[in-house]
Length: 176
Image (cartoon, rainbow, N blue to C red; front, side, top):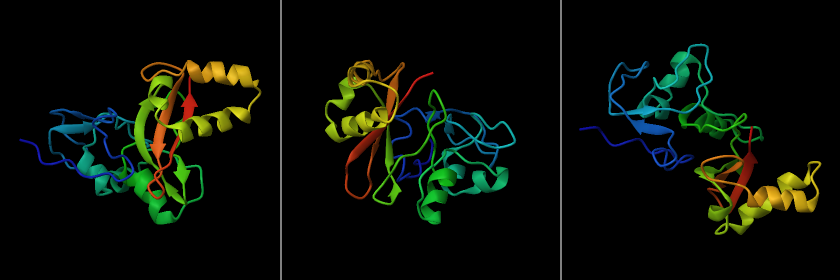
């Protein structure tokens, strides 16, 4: 029997998002097979894809031992929160370079990929996507057509986050 998974405040359901899967694989950091393995991106010199357990991510030992990061944060946030997200939180796989969204001065919680259907329950996420597209070369009708084409399991897709402070939902979109 496996031990309970660590809690990741910035990625509350990494099994549900597919970042962590059940596996008998041995972790390259602690050399233990704990029943789960991380499948998301690892930015390190060594190829660690599918070779780290959630516990070594949570306690920071994987980041320290392999000088690894698990995601990218583009906004300015306090260093302790930056380290918590980039070095102690499972990332997620995207079509392009992933980025962690920030709201209310802190990293938001990643909830998973969503399409247009899933976004209907989150009008503030729709607004953040419209704002994102408003800064590009697209007309309003092109942007709306693109947003209606978003799909949870294909492309284009959107990545849904929830602010840990105010509870607002935000998202960004991606495709190849």
